[in-house]
Image (cartoon, rainbow, N blue to C red; front, side, top):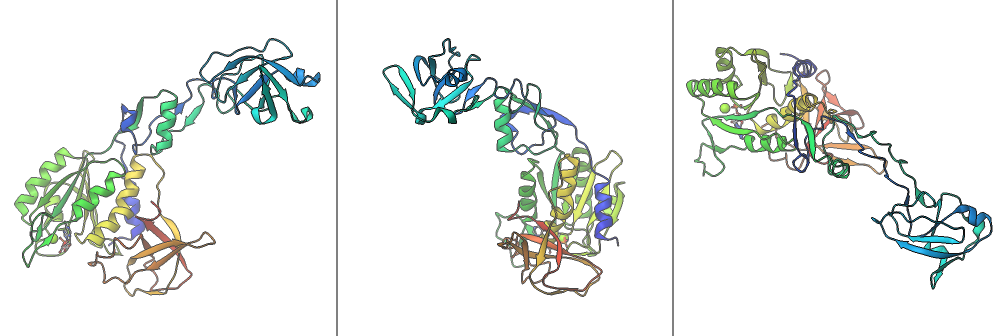
Length: 403
Ligand code: AMP
Ligand code: MG
């Protein structure tokens, strides 16, 4: 049995690169940007007033002129109107393209406008050359990077892409994933289970977690029959980059998955981690680089292993920063006698001092998944200790609240 850190190291050393593809920007939300977004021209592309008012020459103010004839009114989107004389101004709106002849803008609030003339009603000594102008190229020069690659595309990034006319975006390709649940006793959610059956839920949860990354996985359910499992896994190992298997990896008489995977020639990288829940986790690969993550079927184990191992692996493979863990302060004492890394479900809150506080939930062990919706995260309590005290700080793997 290996430690959590060893398991993580083995999984991370198998991060993969699925390449890149070009897609229409409106479909790119949540995908990973594979190119830098650059400005197609200076930003802003022209000197632009930041207020509505008049544009004039600062030298006129220096000469003591306070009354200006309005040459023209210029709206945003209109061609720039030059200021040709020292007693002239152009009435101009925020966002319009200021002509290069004008160097100062005075806002309406500091003016009296009357019959084609604008008169300054504030102290001219307070007027500064260049005031109220957002100058051409001040934010970015043409060709500069606006958004660097290797991050998830957010609404803000999509807006920036639109603003520079990038309607086709280069993004990281996603792996082809199949989620396989197992178990004779597990019936579909649409079915009424008999007294000895349960409705399956793992596939639904796993698929929903992957949706954040725009990975659209296929779902498959297999009975605990070695022939059925062998045929299905053989097919899946040809068709998919990643197999996410839930159930059938423990020590039971009907846990056929590890044996069948080995019969099919896959390479076992580990089986069993010193952790609770999720101890029987099996991880392996095939020669062409397909990966198999096979979690024990209990939904808490699946959820924990997914967030502790698979999501970070996916983030690393997609070339984005790994989002978790964060660190939280334990809010109560915990005793855990087994020599295993203990992933306890916690509720999170942020204290007025900005600290992340984690309070454990009263759960009935790893089979109890009723608290998954109430908890926000797993707190990872190290295997080399049995007593954990209020106030101590440990890693936290959030799946709600901070995500
Ligand atoms: P296993 O790892 O196959 O021994 O499964 C352990 C337990 O996990 C089962 O007895 C079920 O209670 C639960 N389980 C297995 N598969 C699923 C599933 N697809 N959805 C929800 N619970 C499951
Ligand atoms: Mg089973």
